[in-house]
Amino acid sequence: MANAYLVLDDGRIFEGRSWGASGKTFGEAVFQTGMTGYQETLTDPSYHKQVVVMTAPHIGNTGFNSQDNESEKIWVAGFVVRNPSSIVSNWRSENELEAELISQNVVGIQGIDTRALTRHLRDRGAMRVGIFSGLEISREEMVVEVRKSSQMSGAFLVSDVSTKKPYIMRAQGEKKYVVAALDLGIKAATPRALSERGVEVHVLPFDSSAADILALSPDGLFISNGPGDPSTMVDVIEVVREVLAKKLPIFGICFGHQILGRALGFETYKLAFGHRGINQPVMDKLTGKVEITSHNHGFALAAPTDGEFTTVYGRGEVTHVCLNDGVVEGLQMLDCPAFSVQYHPEAAAGPHDAAYLFDRFVDLMSKKVGV
Image (cartoon, rainbow, N blue to C red; front, side):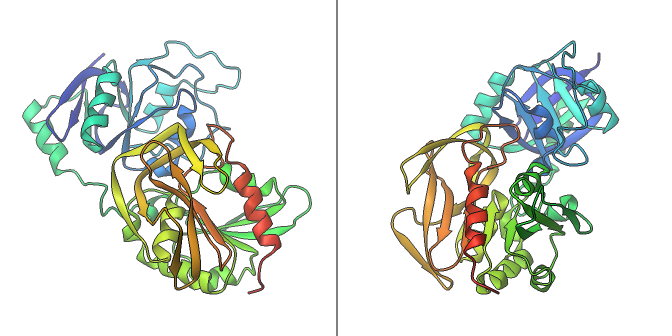
């Protein structure tokens, strides 16, 4: 087994062993705190251009199957684990995890102290990283290559992950509503959750126009999760503004939350550490209830958390905040039918505390003002 190295852009190097494909890869180093759901993490388009460090030490014991994918491929730039499972023990498994990584040319590393790496990232913040596996290259050269790699701030990545052509997920049972879903990196669990509630979901490419959306005569617009810097999404933000003006019900999650916020006139900013994992505590300011939620975001919305705010589309308020650091986790408009949350109510894998938000979207569509 060949040596492999994980190299951070601050010069720290972790030595381990090759795992997955050989070669080199670069991305933003982030840690993921979930103890389960590694396959959903790997195939979540929101992790595009990120090297994911799993904080749980034992990964791979359930193998890999075709049913739990959140998209058609693995999107992470690299995968870092402490101790990959030597056996697969799950009746649904169709392949070993490492074999799947190799088949999709995903460079990984095993055998490093992921606890020490996580503590380093927790103290220093997310940063650029490279994994070099089975290569003859000096430490100095590795650090130089990492520092030449691109950063997440200013990154426009949605065009890589969005669907190239529209597709439809039919409603389960009676069709009650039609939703246009703007695919910025949508997870498979999201249209499925809407479909289970009698919604026919038309998934559209990221560069769809407001006219394309309204031509469907939808009952609502869903804005999905996705990768990259929300400040680069100028055209999509303008489309959302046009739809807001029509008073069509809107629901945004994660990246979609940031897009809606910017459409309302707020700024976004890069978090030093980001929120990733399936155990993030969020408080609903309207009820005082605390939810345990699934997150994957490195940017956040700068909106006032006390009292109402005013926009050109009317009044609104922040509805949810993270109890760890006070980050804005949700907002709603009071004079038009739009709301969003920074986390994942479909939570695959993860807690289901926030699944009611899909019901809230359905309820909003039932009361919508005609376009």
